[in-house]
Image 1 (cartoon, helix red, strand yellow):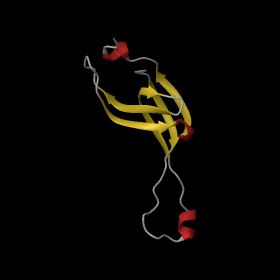
Image 2 (image 1 turned 120 degrees about the vertical axis):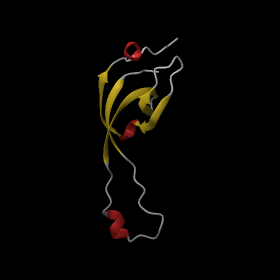
Image 3 (image 1 turned 45 degrees about the vertical axis):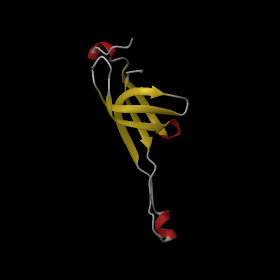
Length: 92
C-alpha cells in the first residue's frame, strides 16, 4: 500500500437514462469534473484506487474506496508522501 494522500481531479462517467430519450436531449448532456482527496491504496498502469478512510489497526481496513481509471484523470497532486508513521501503520 502506497499510503500517500493525493488530490485527484477527474472526469466522471455518467448514466443518462434507461428509457427512450430524445436524441437532442442526449446531445446536451455533459460530464462532471470531480475533485477527490484520499489515500492511494493501490495503483496499476490503468488505474488508481483511492480510499477516503483508513484504519490504523495492525491489519488496516479502508472505507469509501473508489477505482479511478487513469485515462479519466485531469490532474493529480501528492499532498503527503507517506502516512505510515503518522498513523503507525504496520507495513510488514
